[in-house]
Structures are given as structure tokens and as C-alpha cells.
Image (cartoon, rainbow, N blue to C red; front, side, top):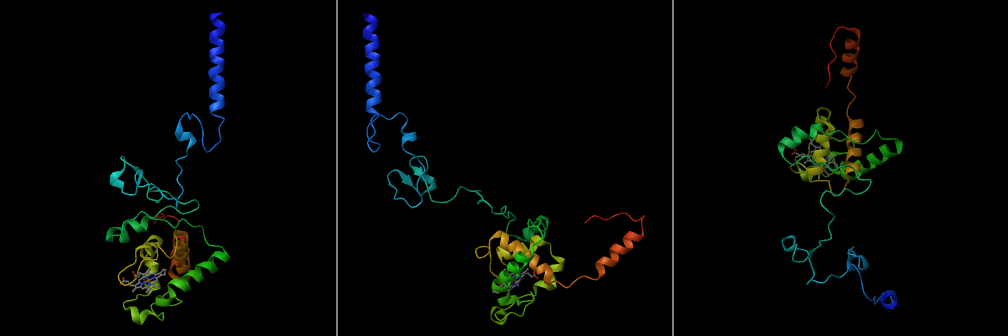
Length: 216
Ligand code: HEC
């Protein structure tokens, strides 16, 4: 007899739990783990209750901190790895030279695109041949010829100047994404005068088999 009472009691409780959770979705009955019922994936532009949320990082903990920004260090899918060289003279001269151009050699379509980007963004000051004779150069003042210096610059240094700017030249980091800036670096290489001395050195080295190879 006692056993039947227990079983009946358990059955009734189970039915009650099931029935109470069968309510409409908007007004659920008993919620086990509310975090799972109500997602914390906040919509970017959703209105937020100031008594619960804060955009001030110092108030983190008391309230839920949310400032619409991606988490620090986040890289957009398909985007190139961030350029981490600091904007100082050591970054310009030493560190930038250690960064390799991450792009493969440009195919025909990409070269045309790189040239288009150069002509839109750079030629106003530097002219179509990457010198210092663009139509805006006299107004800006101090414009330098890119190709006068670039053969001696590592790819990273040209990228550095585009990223941070240099004296009268502003930064192009917001106009050109990383991929586009590396494409322009490759385009500038195609404008540089072809070095005639380099093959001669290779030929001499090849003839002299006893010469130790120099790695640069
Ligand atoms: C508003 C004019 C202007 C535009 C546009 C411009 N530059 Fe410059 N650029 C300058 C000036 C001025 C300098 C000289 C900065 C200095 O005093 O060192 C310079 C210098 C440079 C240098 C360094 C040359 C050296 O001798 O160190 C590079 C590389 C360069 N520019 C690349 C670019 C590229 C690539 C673009 C396009 C993304 C570009 N510039 C767009 C004005 C401009």
C-alpha cells in the first residue's frame, strides 16, 4: 500500500513538471538553468538596459561589460595576420625589415588591381611612376620619390610607411586593408628600375665554385 502511494506521488510530480514546462515559449513555466533558456548572445544594435549593462571597462563585474567591439586580438576571417611592428624608429628601420610579404606573387588580375589602388591612393602625390611628381605634391610639400629609396627598403618598411604614415604623408591603414597594402608593395617593386648589376654577381658566383655562398 505504502509503495503504491510513493509511486503515485512520483508520477503526479513528474506529470506536473512536464505540464508546467509545456507552457507557451514566451512564458515558460519552471526554468532549469535560465542562462540556457535566455541566450546571452547580445545583438549588436539591440537596446540595452543600463542597470544591467555597462560600456565602461572599469565597471566590469558589477555590471555586464559590452562595448560592441570585437575581442582584442580577433582576426577577421580571411584577413591577414596583424602588423605588430610598433610605430617608432626601431620599428621603421630594424623590425619592419623582418616582416616578409605574406602574399604570393600577384597574378595578372591582382597586378592590375594593385596598380589601380596605387593610382587612386598614392599617385596624387607620388605620380604614376612612384616618384614625387603627382599633381598634389607641390601643395603637400616634402613628397619623396618612392622608387629613389624603395630598392634599398625591405617590403616591410614600405608597408610600415603606408600603415603609419611618415611626416607629411598620412597613414593609409584605414583606406587600404592589409592585403591591399601588401599588393601595393609588390606593385612598387614592378616600377623600380631593373637592377642590371645583380645577374652579373650571380654569374661570377656561379663560375667560382670555391666561393662560399652568401645568404642574405
Ligand atoms: C598626400 C600625399 C601623399 C600620398 C597620397 C602618399 N604619399 Fe607617400 N609620401 C608623401 C610624403 C610627403 C613623403 C615624405 C615623408 C618624409 O618626409 O619622410 C612620402 C614618403 C613615402 C615613402 C618613403 C620614402 C622614403 O624615402 O623614405 C614611401 C615608401 C611612400 N611615401 C609610399 C606611399 C604609398 C605606397 C602611397 C599610397 C598608399 C603613398 N605614399 C601616398 C606623401 C604622400
